[in-house]
Length: 215
Image 1 (tube, helix red, strand yellow):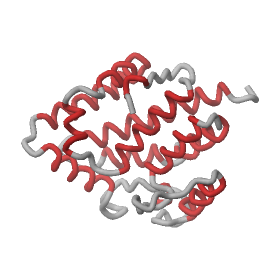
Image 2 (cartoon, one colour):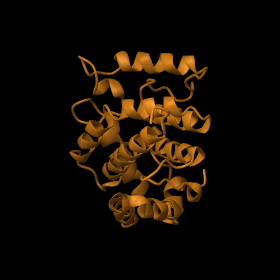
Image 3 (cartoon, rainbow, N blue to C red):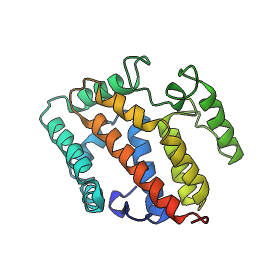
Image 4 (cartoon, rainbow, N blue to C red):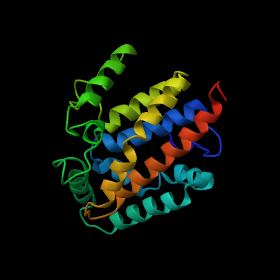
């Protein structure tokens, strides 16, 4: 994915292929820890074109936070290991200690793993003729999987379904983001990322609503 091709504009809906690329970019960051090679691409400035357009589109504060976290990582001798430890702290411990990236942990009566939201997402994937990657053994309501689906919906022109999924994510991602802010990490990369995602979903929700046929 070439981040420089992503040009979201919160004031109006970005083209579908650009929204799809941005959703997919977020999905990769939540799917697993960054490898050493991936982290080095960040250090080389590969994300700067994306950050530039995001800042121009109204996300300057979120971009500044992300850049601050990246600069903090540069100063660490074991940056990749530290960031991987932060990923574990944020997303891989128990429901009380981490901001688990599953819809079922925030919605429904019990708010636990593999709740009704997971079943509903699995059924939704099946309706679209999509399946879960056997090499990625996560519950269907994992944030990365939902963002990948969101990317696919945008790319295939299913704007109403995209709007519906954005609205569904906004039922729990704000709480997820708030939980991320409370976790003690070596650097603020993942808390900053969650704030950026939450803001983006809010802006895209408004833009997609303006584009819907009833309007």
